[in-house]
Image 1 (tube, rainbow, N blue to C red):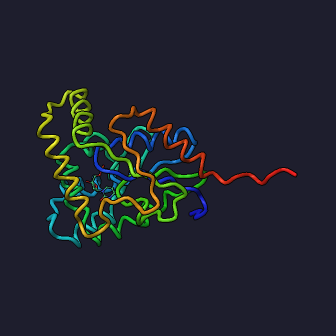
Image 2 (cartoon, rainbow, N blue to C red; image 1 turned 120 degrees about the horizontal axis):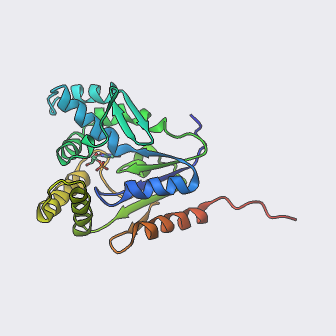
Image 3 (cartoon, protein in one colour; image 1 turned 90 degrees about the horizontal axis):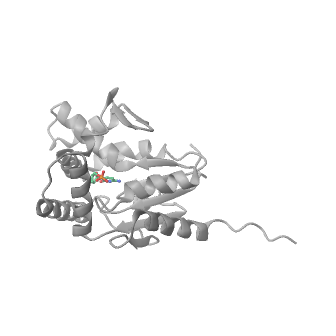
Length: 227
Ligand code: DC
């Protein structure tokens, strides 16, 4: 692991657009990307597939430790099977949010996340990227958007995929999940003290990406002055 590779962290609540923004920023910079939420979703899927009791924190942590995951440009495979679509389903996301406060699981996923930090750089998105996993990140973004704006985006995504969705249910679900992520004792969803808070409620994805790239250009080390 190259501990000197730069990291940009993008934390924020569910459906704030952080995944899309992280991918686009990574593409613009030619860097790698870590979707840490996918690791929690993959753990949830493994718990479901192996019929593990979600209340059994040690068994859940073992499931996280034993995940055989391969990320590839089109998505992600778990134990050799393509699961990109299934881990995006609401019931998997909800279970991931219920499992996420488990300290043993978080510990089990920590090194796996840090291993993504390789040259030339990493854009990592999640909840605790700037507060815990990459505390020394060069730039920390906390991406927010109000619950209705996020629910509308999620609703559109689901309908585009041919999945029926109810906006009011999605707003309620967003609020419930936010409360669980914010109020949990372990690695709660809070901005790092040195994070830049970006509100994307009224911004397009392109504007949000540009915002992050502008912030990055300001933290880039200044080349030595020519004499
Ligand atoms: O970002 P997402 O919606 O894919 O994440 C799914 C759940 O995983 C989320 O509700 C909380 C948990 N999570 C976490 O606790 N820490 C992270 N770094 C990323 C996700």
